[in-house]
Length: 156
Image (cartoon, rainbow, N blue to C red):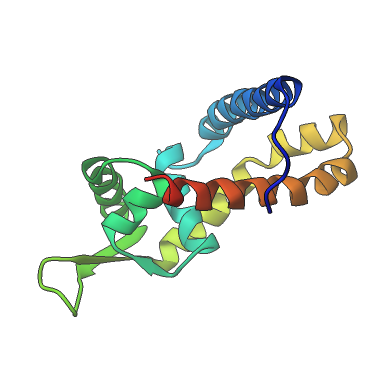
């Protein structure tokens, strides 16, 4: 849905809005990574979480595109996850060159363990801020994320 042209004030407000989201993302990423179990890092957790949110299998290329990283960076992350038994990388049956990546039962359990490890931090935030107000904002943030996700494909 297209709206009328935005004013400089609207653009400034949107810039501040996205700047705040970026800062919040950076701060929470560092806090979350510190709580992750068993040497898991944020990138590795992100892949495990992607499987829970999006699809049960993917090619390394699809994952690299989803995370907007190079193929080499994704291959490195996937190798570390496979070495820990958290994902399985197999040849794609439809192509001898391509790979197929799936999360393992151990990977699903690790994702759950990682989320649980963030519990104390999340509990402290819940004590400080109204979870009800955050829940109301969540729907709008999800719409913005969906828009931006589609936007990146339109403008490549």
